[in-house]
Length: 429
Ligand code: GDP
Ligand code: IMO
Ligand code: MG
Image (cartoon, rainbow, N blue to C red):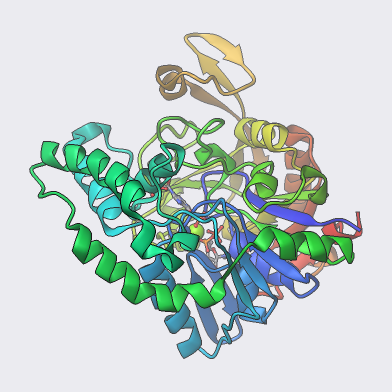
């Protein structure tokens, strides 16, 4: 029996939330291990739509859920999201939600800095979610962060606050902003501490105890491999490692705890924010994919850029993240196309290459080479078994598997939880 890590294999929004929710029925714990409330995971259960940014998607089914130390946590957002979900009837108690006490906090000036920098960057902006994710991770690595456990010791924070404010006041002065008001910050933290602390604990203990008892752990990634700080389209990436390997360091359990790595990939490609996108279709095809797929960001409402499936990037994601099987989502969005294209290679300065180069200028210069496949006119929307898929759709899936050198384990055919085809059970491996 394997524990499963679910990660995005493209630029995020692949449908991780739906798949995690579906798998969570059979999991004993669901763990977020990186990112923060830059994520937007949508779950559709009958008439109900749940939008989660920070909370693990298992929470909706009532599966015990963990926010690991690799996450950056905005405590005010946490409170708002918990209250919103409670309003939808989801039970969230310290039995159901555990937060790593060594999680770094996102503070109001992180959010300000994120926006100030973006506004000052002109055409060079990253297109972040402006939620303070990057600045909070910088403070973690710079050893200046205030962490969840510090909320119980706010009167002893002096030297740490000195280092934090010295750094930020210098930055803020450059943006014509007043220095941080320490007393006001401490007062805000005192107020929110009472909400956060009941959920806080050294979660590595609970995770390791669950592992010893043979419990099934489901690790829930945010963003996608192409937004990974090392392996993504740097600098147009997020500030954390999104690859499956982070599940271990970001939650406090050994790497052997992750068995099956399920990479989630759309049957086409989308991206939100700036950065290169070789198979982008800034034309009628892209418009059609965006309209059929409702491609608007959950977090910022921004229109997502759309294009054909890029098998070169997907193969690379599968390799660097050790993906065991793919969940191919939104197959239904391809219904009705006469022809479907797949990017199978690149041309860079006249030469053919079969991988994505690291340099940003080369990434932008790459031209996609396509293979054309016949589409299908039948509908796949709502299909729940392989037998319901048209022959051309099966042929497309088989070709994708061949190109990316990785098998398809699941297929998703609508936003609804149960509209999912199981090909190979990740938990059974
Ligand atoms: P995540 O960030 O990876 O969890 O993905 P998002 O929730 O941001 O975006 C995926 C969107 O596609 C959501 O609105 C889902 O409800 C929807 N979705 C998921 N799977 C499918 C599918 O198979 N077909 C269609 N049409 N929509 C899907
Ligand atoms: P989920 O989990 C899609 C993108 C932003 C921007 C870049 C950096 O829903 O798949 P950040 O705020 O993280 O510093 O922004 O990363 N981005 C996402 N794109 N889905 C996400 O999450 C994303 N989280 C961040 O648009 O390009
Ligand atoms: Mg999303």
